[in-house]
Image 1 (cartoon, rainbow, N blue to C red):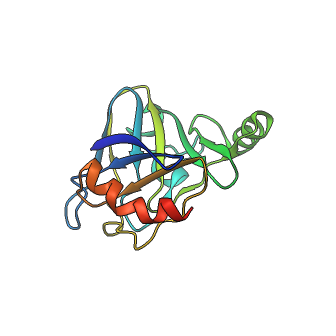
Image 2 (spheres, helix red, strand yellow; image 1 turned 90 degrees about the vertical axis):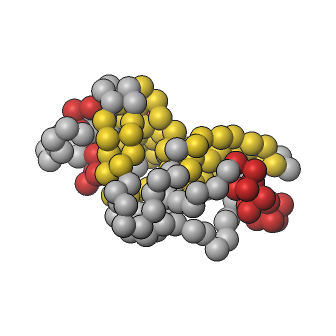
Length: 166
């Protein structure tokens, strides 16, 4: 995975590219201990509670290793948060009192942060490679991802027309 950040005409863009995420090949995301910037490079949304588990329905080898998952909501201008260590009511209360929303899905092309207590491989192979035909940016932070295998300069070139229009 290649992670990079760049500034383009007043927009700060951060991208994570899952270079090994090709159709027919397992898309195991190798998450180290601590924080990892990742992206949904598949054309299927990630159902966060289903992938990371919940207190009521933990996923063996995953849930106990996940501290938290975060995604920037550029339109709502706030962070969306999830942790499998809280039940639904605790999660909603925690998020609301801190000005966050509860993270339920990560759409194709969305970037996200994940904090792990232990290194873990996570299977995100649902769907095909996400290749956007257009981007919709908002002024400010846009945490985005693609499933294509491109360099940072190639990615910047591919999104420049959409960033300039924002």
